[in-house]
Image (cartoon, rainbow over all chains, first blue to last red):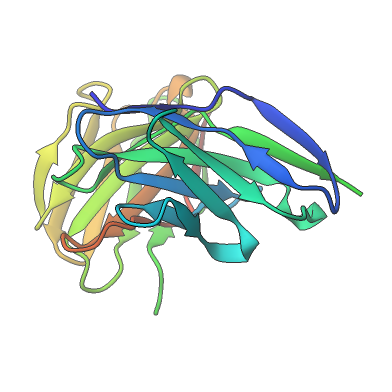
Length: 115
Length: 113
């Protein structure tokens, strides 16, 4: 079965500094990978996805993610963090890769950006 | 475009009562999902519909939970009878077969006392 792991419960970063939220995956076949963000008391918002092609994927709000097949990782990054980026971030994998659009989510990582 | 619309946004009910959560997917989407979010278990897929047909209901916790999709623009998730451990945020989401991005509603925040 497909799965993703987010090894950090929380990430703290100062405003203006680069941020990284980690995600590793375990899939059979080619992975379809996603990042979503959840602001307090809100639903999940799509940020970006990797299906095929360029390993560096750009998404909403200045976020990007790098697909690394050898390390089975799909880390979320942003060059300069904003306080407004503070939220809960979820990595997800499509299961099965080429079949129905069912998403399996990681446990989530809480990002706290301090002024 | 209107996104996925869920109602009610918040509900507080007493143990033993019936709870019905409603969802209107994005127009044109033919896949619909119900997820549950709790602190202990994170995001869990409860049930998945494709073209109004339940495809995977292996995540439905027990017989107290049921879901229907009578047409392409409406789905319900019912809990009867409700229990305090059902307290959670229930999300509805939708997508189309040819797409890869699943779009979520704002959630229904359920508290069973």
